[in-house]
Length: 72
Image (tube, rainbow, N blue to C red; front, side):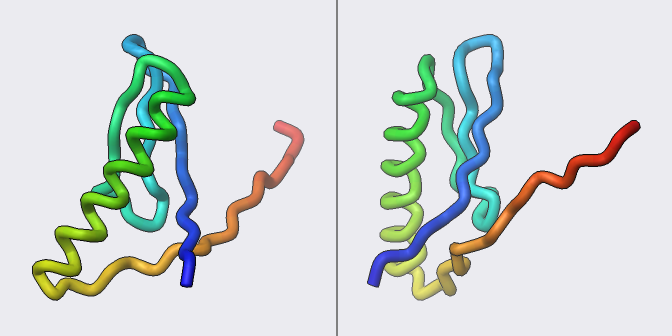
């Protein structure tokens, strides 16, 4: 069954940093947003494999985030 995780991308001097909100240990960087997305998927696959091999519990994905607007 497919799982979904929430990615957060931050612009940095060398390109973009990507990190999973529900699993902050899954983090990577890429020169472009597209490259960062692909590298983040690869990092997630590697982390899933490592956790399974170690018998560790895999964090659940599927978080829902929304922006809240307020006048300041």
